[in-house]
Image (cartoon, rainbow, N blue to C red; front, top):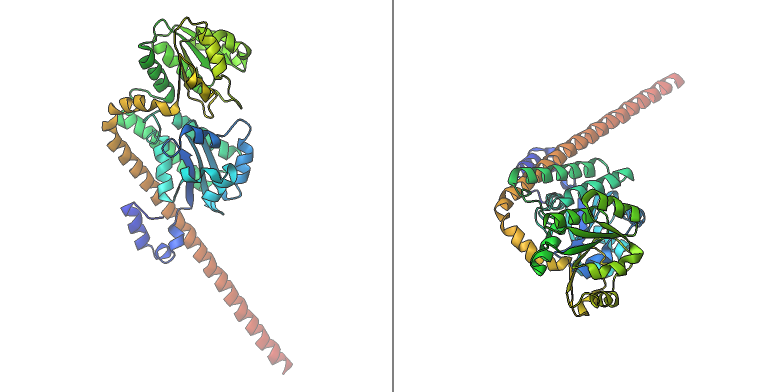
Length: 393
């Protein structure tokens, strides 16, 4: 680890214990992963963590480190490792294969800490400043802790990341206008349709992102929303909470012709809509187009929909224009946000160096006591041998 914090560098220089042992002050922490910066959605979905896979993945990853946190969102899959016993890249490739190698990044030490802090603050998100990621980082840490995969170092780094994220949002004004992938998708639909008042929206999914999407649709003026979900009860709960009609998943094709805009935000092992189904729905829309936005990873709308006349299919990577528009209003907050991240990362470095010095000092003290005990035992043994020899004379 190259220490970026001047105070930390001075601490090492002033400590003979740390200065004499380069390994003693290294932060044994790393991250490896891919995100929207390094991989398009068709690659990201190959590393997505599907329902029921997390336990097996963590079991594999824990062979490479004592502490492991797995962060998987629609725009990133990242593995954070502390107490490394293997190669981080090998850990990731062992879980998801070597075909992703060209899209991976890996950071260690303070760089890895800074990366997580930026992620938690929303500074590395597709939609800069989005708030969902803070909760996603917290849940990833809680999942690691529940499985006994979070110890002193990962706990401290995760707590620091959440604290830094909170500071960035409260002190910089970056979250004054709450943004998310959901809000960007709704804004994209508004731009495409010239407004959403009087339109009908169909949401596939009923989870956290779907709920945010429905909230933003309501704010944008949509009154008629159809909620489709594999679990009908969850769809009813969401529709009752925010208003909307419920459609059982098996009747999706019957409800589809009503939709001016379809936003897909759900986890499914297969595509839930394809070009043939959309073409059939458009036949009943009397020439009115349909805009479909897939913000799921893996995608659940078949890419062949893009070839259907009258259908306009978009995915997460198509949100770029909206993202750049939203960023323009928050760009002034970025320098202060970056300064907060640097300060928080420096605090972590100082904590780690203090802890390393204490541990190193305790180890030396323990070794000295052990040496003294051995020396005393040798003296006692020699004295005993002399007494025995004298007695035999």
